[in-house]
Length: 95
Image 1 (cartoon, rainbow, N blue to C red):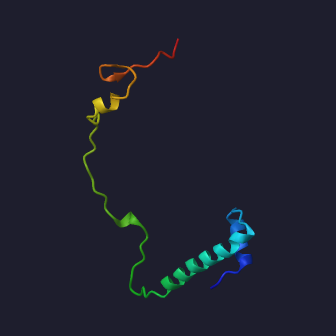
Image 2: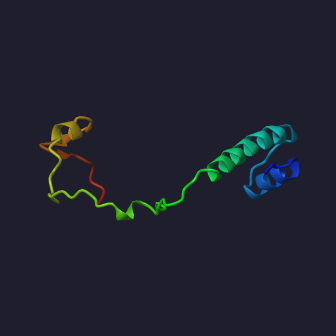
Image 3: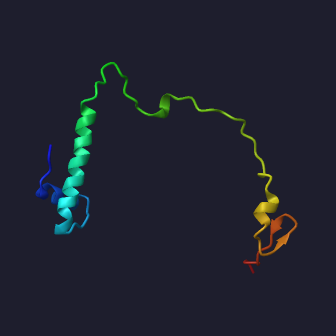
């Protein structure tokens, strides 16, 4: 399958992409090469191969759901402009 210039302009219009007349030939070449790759993929023999429908069949690795503080208090507060102990100090916003 080969795309002509009018089809490339139509694809650009549908994709809401402004294409200058000078760019049409380049896009035509690129899109034709993409279609060539797809035609090559269609030639691959996939008889007897189950289609992959996603990762839904994979079992996820489980870990214990434990709440922690992360253990990085000093790293987190290192850039704080002002701190009191292991807390940020912020200006009062409610009067």
